[in-house]
Length: 320
Ligand SMILES: [Zn+2]
Image 1 (cartoon, helix red, strand yellow):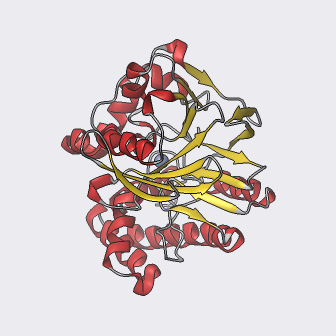
Image 2: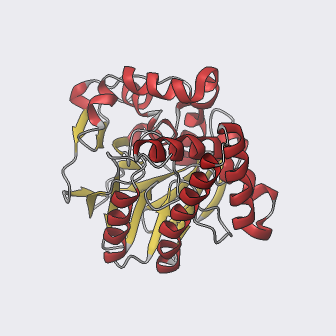
């Protein structure tokens, strides 16, 4: 089907949009909302399926329904590519790998061991999300080591009959990978390409803890820019074709958030006050996009996470 929705066997309505030949955007319906978290489905001529991002376990029914809505059987998944291991991108990888023993999961070599043994990942996320861990993300299962493959920077995979290059792109996370489909002019940006809600112009850099690194991020944006892509496919927000304008906004918007956090913290703001200031800043940046876009953006990249991430950055750099 070219576009739209179909009812999955578990009763969840699937949301799949065809982006290109053999490429589908699957909305994961996170928190019952459209446009917050997406996965991308790449389909081989032989019918083998590759996913870029799994989303969290809480949205697995929507992922499966979306694959079915696109006209495919989720049991044909053979390959999962993860831009990084944060739970909103990769949380369901372990459950998927358990269901599908033939599934191979590929990610950055620094992230790969945490898929095999997610204890540290879960502990770190629990410090951030506390008792909301299960409600937000669901089960985080370990993946048998033989199902996990570490990517190399610049490595070109053959996916859905086309080459797909893995580009190490730190900044949001040190272990971040973007995937570049040169034939289709499409780059799957994970979080390094920012977060942007459909129909809006504001590109929000997800400044979540613990690893935000503005200088590394700038290097990664330069790397993305050099691709001269025709389309950016964001995990949080979907595809965008105004590639240059989008990338132009990312680093200045990160700098603005950092300046805001610096001023607030130096004026004595606590995390609650800084979170409110960031939320107000983001709301103003979105302009008249409407409350839905603002709420979706908050679910995709919460202000309290940016507050924590920027506080950590500025403290580490000795600026506060
Ligand atoms: Zn992330």
